[in-house]
Image (cartoon, rainbow, N blue to C red; front, side, top):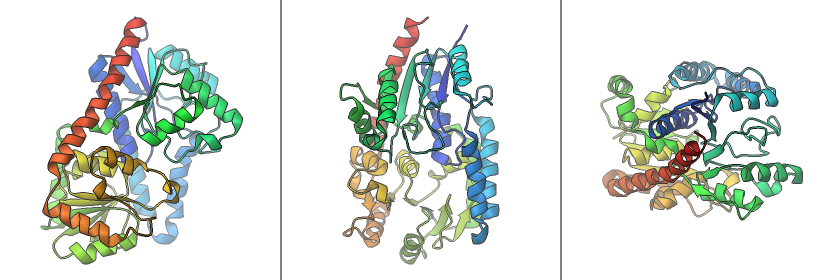
Length: 384
């Protein structure tokens, strides 16, 4: 008898947020419904190949070894995830058979699983967009369309996407932009805003030993308080160094940065998660970097500098707007927004942390999980 729930997401991405949301969602769902919840262990070959091609592209910059270290660290971390039997076939029909035979229901998400038409390498049909061949109940949780625009898809793809959404038992998205994309296909679809799964887990308790070992690493590096720099924008890093370099140790995380005192290339996802509890401040262009600042009451500023967000809200501005912390967001594509303004806001936040606002924001986010769980429980009870 099938007694498992399958989660389909980008769990093998060389990306801290992608890994941690996969870890958090499987654990949070399993805890609430008391049914084994696992990640459907399939990643398209081209996605795996991409990371090695990217590493090779770093050779001229002298960053090849560092990039390969990141790949090795994430590969090792896969062992900590709840994974299904490996799916080796790329045949969509056989993948659907696997889902139907092994699970009571599947959840697609979270992360950018709703970026339909974004890549020619993953045309319909594909496992991230399960159609009517998957006959078990289907849910999407905290899915993000991010930079996709459904209205610009070919009419045939719009029709396919619309039918898939209409066949879901529950449609959960992570932000208002993604909600708007779904409704652009069918304004009568019921959509729900969910929290990112990483809000649901206290990683500092989950990964205590990793936190202790990371704290020891940091003590060997410096006695100064640490500001984490999570951007490849060297101009920002150098301006941060000019302002805070004497008082703070500047640590580049994930991306190397010319303004940093040190770049930590081989940080595991577990270490990345707990690192926020050890920093004094953070400057980030990452969505999950922003989320983990909120979770740890950490003084921060976040920014975008991407033309994809011209004229609309980004995933970072969306979460900070709903958290009443939009003063910490800077769209550097706008002419009137300067790096100096961002640095002044960080200085202000370091002097007077926004702890109460962040605590309230995290609690409000967590509440967005439970309507989804109620619907999941209802469906599971109906099919028992």
